[in-house]
Image (cartoon, rainbow, N blue to C red; front, side, top):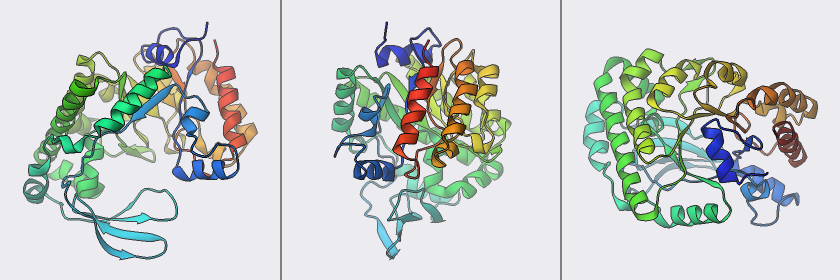
Length: 359
């Protein structure tokens, strides 16, 4: 008998029996525009409803330090815009397509600037919360029996927009107590904001933290440094979710396998994205950790970008039978789907993956 999406994902995250593997995906905004223009999607139709994903999420918090700050434009051309934002960071963003902003400069590079400019502003103000957006998304998910997640960032992803990766990592090595204070401040802010939101609008079915802690073949920090500096504050936020009886999904791009044991100790219930080109191997993770956590992702997006149906078929055939054993898997690429991927290619990926992933 077919399960509802909510029932399915609830069981997958507990590694209990299901009718099929789960289904979810992330896209760049350009992809929806392209597929709508090509006639594959109706005007205004979301990719999430079109492919009937099992998960639904809402990102309701604004964690920029100075909420009143109006972005200051430093320079602008036809393709990019360089601005100082409410974290007093100077970032260059592309105007013609979706991409990660370029980190140009940061006002906060050491402890004194953090303590003077940023920390005093990080209070759990209701103005930081989009109550209506969360409430409406939660209601829609309930009506469609989707598994609904609060989505947002954890301490690592909250730090680098303020000080940049280089200053943050140097701080971890040279002034770890400063970075612990940053992590402590942000973890308390997130929990306090969740307490306000959930008391008023109800708790979600799960928590999804974006936390990109790796690059190619290496994490940004050693497992020892993770445990000493970051893990206690992950544990605080994960413990809060578990106190409500809800699971924690952690998204992390890059090679983060050395950090997985520490993340499991902190309370992670599911690891998501599992980036192949960075060195991650979803089958190795299944073998080593599949009895402790669920997995989401690990399918090489480069095959989708190349529209290589044979490679997609081969990868799904090699991975899905192993990943579906004893439950605990949600089908997802290892990154976000760009507009170079044809609709027909992605449609095949979904249909073939679910065919192989049905019990």
